[in-house]
Image (cartoon, rainbow, N blue to C red; front, side, top):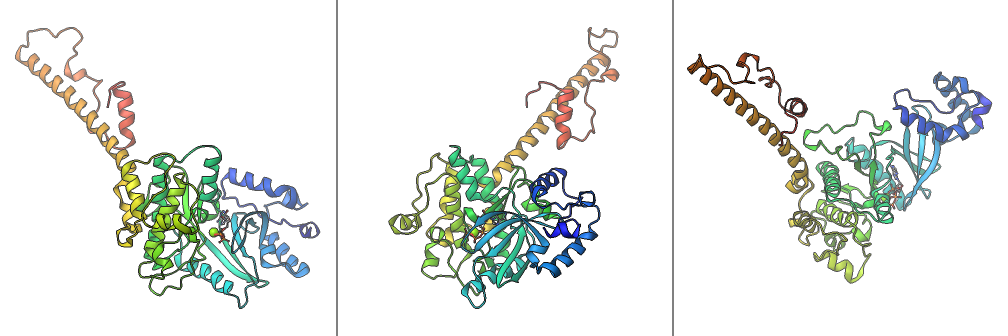
Length: 423
Ligand SMILES: Nc1ncnc2c1ncn2[C@@H]1O[C@H](COP(=O)(O)OP(=O)(O)OP(=O)(O)O)[C@@H](O)[C@H]1O
Ligand SMILES: [Mg+2]
């Protein structure tokens, strides 16, 4: 309503966002929130400042209301509610988390601050939900994070279940590798997450427009976008430092036994344990127990039955993540290099090299044949050439030597030069 009085756009349109995103987003807010000054929509962003300043003055709007347009509530949790919002100034989507209860003096204040401290220290990583800003308002903590358009892993698991489908083993390995990369980053910053579980792992279906500049830049950590989705660790409300931990136990279903017994000597391995249980759920295991005999047997290394058996190396790896002896659980760093998780990639590279090798062998055989024929012709110059055999100089059908044969060019030269040659 405010926008109508002031005759200025209430949201800018970011010209750098991909068209599809812009169109989708525009549709979502166009009905309810577009100003009546449509001609000027997005063309004169400076007017937004006027709108914002006047709105704040005239209507006592909060920073949240004046800077963001709330589109929908996307989640409710222990901490509070999460809203999908457009930032009026940049036109991009964000997930904004607002604490449920007033904070001052409460234990929740510390929890809310933990999340902000952790985000601020962590900086950017492709497998950690990105943080933009935080502030307090009416005694509530508000945190502005990257919006993940694929929801949480928990949502994805439920969706698969409803559709009667399962993640393939390759997808599960990709998930484990990506989350391990995020954990490796958190752990190498001297922090532990302590609340790893499917509802705290978020999915981006495509590169997020509100996360420009982000990329799979670390050479060791590349290739994770090949499967199409990017997994990111979020909800840093339980993060603490490895060396002087202040442990606020996370979800008991994912709690490692040593943490229950207040052994905080190797907390990164508690994250690994929770990741192991997360993997079981993603592989279709039944819901995890909160306590009782079943809870204990999981911590004694007894895995539940899965709807579809995993290959034995992969199952072995998950078993290792859940090992009662935390020293036997691999670190996040080790997981990132693990052959079971890297084999998909290694396999692709090997197949490519095999193809290149076969092309080279074929080429060598052709040249040897050519050479032999040329020798024969030289030894008996009077003998006429057999029909169909052209003199060597005209053998234009041979592939050019010295042509680059690596990567994508191989496939091209093969399909041009030797159709049907089996590699
Ligand atoms: N960045 C985001 N992008 C998309 N959805 C999000 C994002 N952050 C949170 N959500 C949604 O909000 C829900 C709760 O968010 P979050 O885990 O951060 O809060 P919480 O209050 O600690 O929740 P819980 O107690 O379930 O852990 C998530 O499960 C997810 O559905
Ligand atoms: Mg959560």
